[in-house]
Image 1: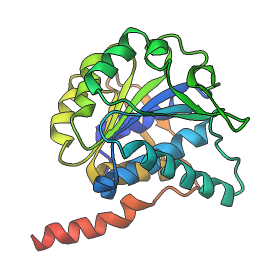
Image 2: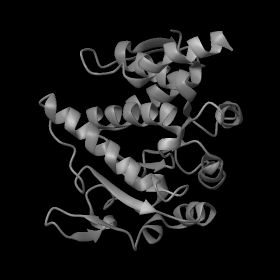
Image 3: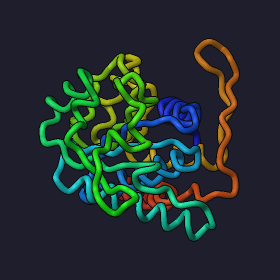
Length: 253
């Protein structure tokens, strides 16, 4: 497999995030696109957890999306525990902000004042109760969207475009989209508004391959960059399982 440049930039961008920093994941996928989105989300969570990156999950596209995302985080946590790794704990390492029903208004609010945008959101705290998410270790030091290390979009809809229009230039942005959304999302990558992206099942397969073996490549300025992989970890998963089925179906068509 030869990973596409946009997937290389996506992976390299995540691997260069400062350890212990915070990103926001806008997760707008549900089980209707899990053939592509679930593999993307799994790979994303594995990378962030292995690198110690804190994350807050928001959704603007579907009322089911927050629970779908929480379920996957718990499944990846069970995987980590089975492998003898520490659990990525809710509140200390990640928080769920739930659904924001207006994508346009939410994007504008985050751009203007992220603390005010999330002020009314609460999540489970260590005491067993609920506390404001802005008091959590994940978001307590975030005073502006510029304090985030990244804003990552996982979606099969145009919610990614809405976010890009409102947050471009304020925070490094990355996208994981379905194959159908790939061509129009690629425009934002080519223009530099996205720092990297993964599109469709090929994008999942690319990221998994990069996680497995890493990559050495020349940047646009001609500097050779070495990005390590996660040798010995569970890297090849849904993308690798589904890619043969996809190509068999294309062959038949």
